Figure 1 (cartoon, rainbow, N blue to C red):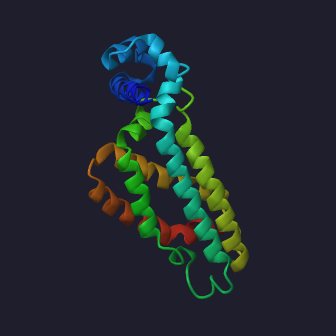
Figure 2 (cartoon, one colour):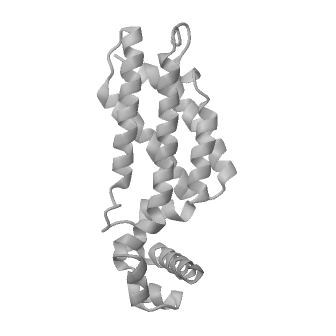
Length: 207
């Protein structure tokens, strides 16, 4: 029903404001409901609890971001699996990483408040470790990619350096989100950072 959809949207918007202002732990469901103009009973019709409300705001953009990452990783793996793909050129040149960066930045900045919630306001919820989980996901891909490249060149993957570089990439995005509000500028900066990282990737992760 239209009224139900509108009520749910009011609660999501009110919840977002409260979480952004106070963080997950200090946010008040009573205040959220009052600002939305509904009773607390109405909130529990749509959401199980405060964490469920927080998740309804922050989880969909995070899930979409993860899908973008997985799709890009799949393209990377497909590219290096082609015959002679790694002969005479660097692996990082096989895929258009600029396009990937623009998609990633667009997803983040199109859902800016949700990612700020995840990065800075999620303590006390099940989402407080979501960045570490994202790093683990990305690292597992980079490990598989690096092992395939290493097998081609007869080189061993340095797991410590791979872990460090994965954190560097994620930390670069976190720093960018925290300090740059303009999407176009963010994409320009992140493209430069990714170029810097990728240029040195093979020299850093292989022994």
